[in-house]
Length: 348
Image (cartoon, rainbow, N blue to C red):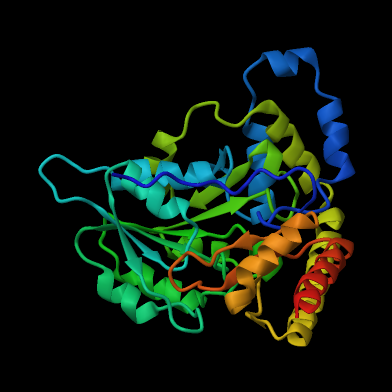
């Protein structure tokens, strides 16, 4: 029996630092664009050409090699449908998933009938290249890699991804989830011409603040994309998302300002963890993984009671005692730090 995916709690009464969202929200230009939508635009099926060209221009790829998605989650599910369904007369296809990982990767794999192959992480959460390569077999159809990793924030060296792509079977792909690439500044997209079996997924939820509208994209060689494209519904991206992403890409200064705040927030979180005796990992994303040990549950609950929500990952293998803390607007981060100090120092 497949274990049901558990979505994070839907908090709307405090500061949401538990889902890696843009804590400042979208650009004002996005709100203006949404307000300008007319009755016919809402009443008709959405056109995708302009938004596709805008996203392709931003990512530096040919529009023919990019498809819009109803959030990057849709791209992950479509990849599972396209590559991991069992074929008549063949063995069960496998997806290799280096841990710790976004829970939906294994969930989608199992939903379509594939077998998730979980790979134990290194103690420092660096990419376990040798163990991933050891797990590749003729049954491998997808290797999922999130770069930087969620929930650790640790980067995977691009040479490691190249090594995996060189080893997988001819009918397999490497799916690289670059949801946090705006924060890391690292992307494999410029190399895709030389890596025809690599597909890269991107989202406009994190750095651009469009999580509520659900808009993402995939890019890669047309042959690698085709099975995924066939699994994406014809009109899955709605008109509001189409209009919003174009407006967001016309206001890159807003995104850059937020990226600067994320960097400052992480610096302040690191310093606070040092003061409080909490272990952490330097992050290339918009969150920080904090190991509070036996204090993790008390810290998460105490913060929630004060209206600050963080993600407790303690029950997942290898993440015992760990909390994932969003790092966005500096003022929000300062509030979180104050609450952490109040909970921990007050109790001790």
